[in-house]
Image 1 (cartoon, helix red, strand yellow):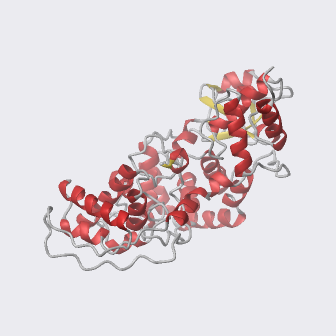
Image 2 (cartoon, helix red, strand yellow; image 1 turned 180 degrees about the vertical axis):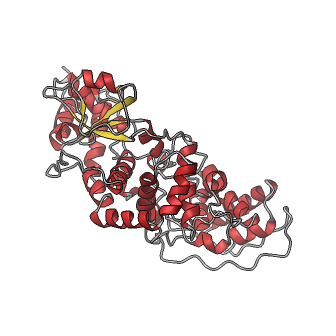
Image 3 (cartoon, helix red, strand yellow; image 1 turned 90 degrees about the vertical axis):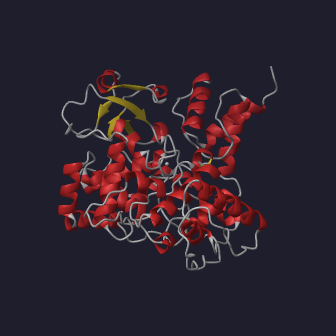
Length: 444
């Protein structure tokens, strides 16, 4: 919902309507200011309000950034944006230091933490307690949202809790600054420029002020449910009908906007997002390769849901068997709604955490099988070594980026199957050793 290949595309709603598959960064979720210099206050806009005016930007001290800004200002003017809005958004900006900016994306928790650490943090007792209190305090708002949109309240509340701790922290970065910094160095240039123009539109139509955009995530996501500017335009809702889509201070607007976003991407009412499942003794884990079968077909293979079916008969529904910890941890049957959550943030770990938190907020039981937290996970460099080895062996793991995603797990499954191993696709140190041994073996 990349800003850095698919990893960056994992950003959330936050990533806006221009991303076809919510490619994933996590734009939802703010962090500390990645640069030491805070964005300066904007100057007063010039008197002219028509497009096509001249611009007089103060130098940022960075020639590349200043050149990009001048070109983009002309482009925005040609696209019909008002001179005063272009000026107020772009003037006074100083680019974020490149290394700090890259680290903000590369250190996203959903990519660098073991999935059980990420899930444990996401579904903490404090977040559950606070979420249940917020559900009670805002019962009328959630009643109205459920009456108008498909997702249940616990899913929307879980997103609210994950993104900003239920509105407690919406970010400290300046959205125009971080978006412009990325565009100026050619990082998803078209995407970031589109988001900057969306900011200008929101200022032009009175939906937001320039100062509101000074409270954003490191990737430019905004408000209590962390929308990118273009997503505010496309999916934002004025819940209380006061004439504004205020995702910053109005919880009703923010929550209704998130519900509208998920509804727009096809949330299926009264269907689960996932169910924990039990695999039988001797199960062929190669079947957990992304294929989708009916629940009835999975049951015929010995897979059984752990919890009673509270959504009516699920046998006809299509589901994917998901093994986030391979054969060592819990298994899940994923339904279509799981992939709708991924339109908010394309990381499997994020969608899983949202679902698990939602279940707890709704009073449903914890998982029955524990995470294998005793297993030492690969470092990023070791993950790169694994990917490189798999690629050399002809099992395409994709880019050697140190991010263990579906492509890497699928390639590892194929390698495991070729060696007669348990084909669960889970990257452990012993698996890395086996891959490296095979990749470095002399041709026979």
